[in-house]
Length: 99
Length: 210
Image (cartoon, rainbow over all chains, first blue to last red; front, side, top):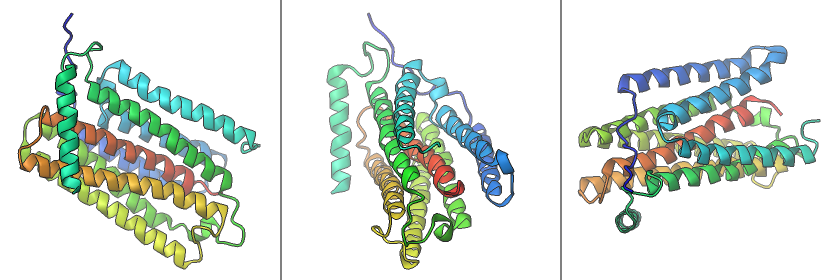
């Protein structure tokens, strides 16, 4: 059975789209830096972590094209990420980091 | 030497791909790309270990300076912005390579390397400033874990710059075997990953106080 390699030209974004994505990333970075100077109280940590996760997702999905690629690549990459988060979450918990 | 090594690596990868049929694989996916994603998945474990170690030790400053005493947030914010924008130029290089636009591929690849070099230069400046403020590599557990983590990241950026400049040289000599666009895309994936790791480091290490 002959199967075709996924074409690398299938990534459905124009250069203008990439510039817009970069603008969004820059805006989020500016907000992140602003949280360092503005007292957000209890919202400080969750807001920073959410913004970090959003930036991570945007770069991986759009710049690395994971959104447009085979699910196999997503599984391979996110499995490594999930394994790292689990292993090191347990590692930090063992040393009472969260308490 | 780097140039020759990189050229040989690309040629070896290509001949391997030819003999094993990269274009028609059992998964229907490019083996090169699958290998790169596997590598990046494993890199999550490497940086996860370094970040966790830093998180554990960031409060162990001994008699050395505390993170808040040495970190220069405005300076690091500009460095982060530079690296973020290098991801944009990298994706533009990949886009140009897919379109067969060699001129813009060279241009954006070179701009990406220059932005990366700016970031590494900023990191060298930052390390020098920290050292002058009394934060040596062995001053405290905090300083050791900080230098190892950010140093490893800096080495990754430097390797990325070498790959970018090598591919520009190889392309100019028209010696890229196989798919030129996929080769540029592979380097792009590595580069974006380095940027993604910095997104995490910038938030967890610099913006969240110990």
